[in-house]
Image 1 (spheres, rainbow, N blue to C red):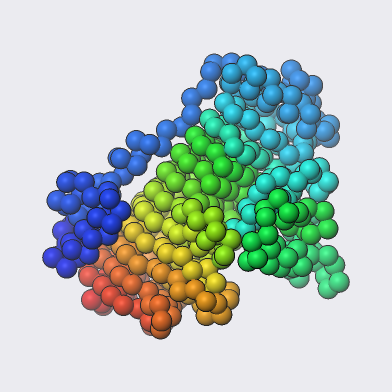
Image 2: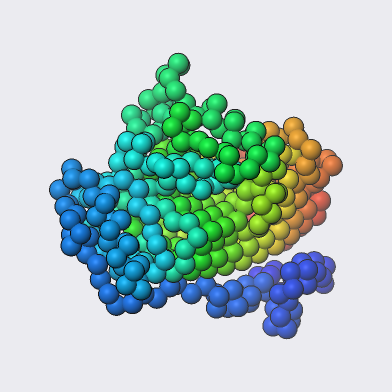
Length: 469
């Protein structure tokens, strides 16, 4: 029986205290000390939007699926008509549709049929005028995402079709300034623009004055929905994104289900909910050039100014292949992350660096707490099974004291990794309350790295066949 289901008195008191703070300690949860009993209450609030049974085929608005015609206006006209009629489905039939950015409106389901491929323009000027966005956790005005919405409700992107961002080592990705992908010394890149944005965030420059876009080389994301509610993203395949694939920002009631992402460019995170609440991510496949899935909540001073946490997030039945981190929280988490439930996921690749990854530093600050993980199957992991890293990027160079505490991990099996645990806190701000139970870690090459950790509780944890804790 799981330690979460049959805890001793010390574990029960610790878990009871954490859930009392959250105000979610129902009698059933208290009786069993099983935090996963809180899922039904969260899931009851996560309801995908329902749309009127009206259809607006984009071909009825002049779209041609020949791969060369610019269909930007046809998409805009179909979406406007659907919205004006009270909502429904904007249908993309089979074919290849070249387009600039698509801006969703309330009550619209953009349905991309099987055999349909959206080819997004490689011309940066197509993504103007500037729109509100959060770029690496800092608010600004920048290029539109390839599919974008702001301050809407009841929107969806569904179907068995494909979103192709058309990014490669000749388009978008060289802006990162990475030598192994088309960029050479002396070429333009994002470094100066990125530094300018972060400086503006630190100095509280009004968001509307943080004007970027042309000349700053801050890449757009593939799908970004901002300051909205009641969102569904389901069934799609996504490839070759300029940057993050799916990035809801400051949203509530979000469902991401059954999507497949394969994109190996720089910062090609799969799904990054940022300062979002009531989120369900399930039955998705990730094969990425950065973190497969990363929960975020704003960066540094700007993230603390906005002050909106990511909370009540459920991740289940997902598959992770290549990526930096598989199931990740951070590093942009300055607004805080709490109430995260992860279960029944499978991860395996020698090119997956960390399976369970928490990353922060003394510039991020913020708190990660109340994270519950169970029933995770790991094949091969390139670096660590569990990494909690306060030394990421700026490391100790900053005034903040990040907090990571109350992490519960149960029934994780790994067949091969370099490290089981890499836990690096700060002396002045140690990692707190890490609980592992009923885990088996085979073929672990190196000893654990444990620096500045209080309460590392391991019960029935086998590393290379030996019981630890």
